[in-house]
Image 1 (cartoon, rainbow, N blue to C red):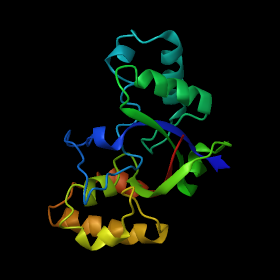
Image 2: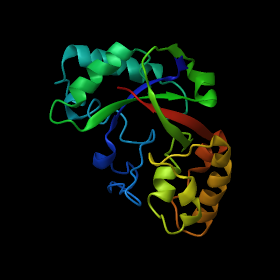
Image 3: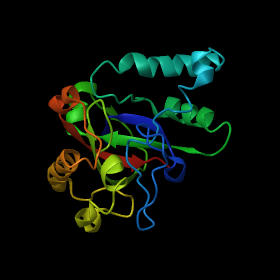
Length: 203
């Protein structure tokens, strides 16, 4: 199977909005489990910038950052073994992170693909504004009342099963922005487009 790569993210109940610095709560007992969960937060932390992290970790982390030379704002690890090592390091103070894999036609066009034979649990589709954030995390999960008509389409992982609905949902988000409900996307990011990203949990 081909994927775009791996990411270490916060477990849903420990996740908060990178934009607002507030926890992203469960809605109807469902947590958001998409791509926008404090990616690499416990890798690129104070220890990394103070050069206190182990040399192996700093080299792996720097490699990820060096390879992320595009406008997506998404840093991927192409190697499962390295990703597991970064996950282990991220959980050095508690089991607060997990490993996901992502695949996306748009993302893979710029980043390429890698092969994996891992038995992934594909959870659903997220929609991500390039260089910004998930429109599901910052839309439905921040203001569930406004987005209530989308509740039947949100699965038990807080994502969409049907990717054909993502553009319609994005239109709802844009309306919410116009009405002052949801946070606006920077014009330069809106011009770059929005990514449909399938998210899978790595065992």
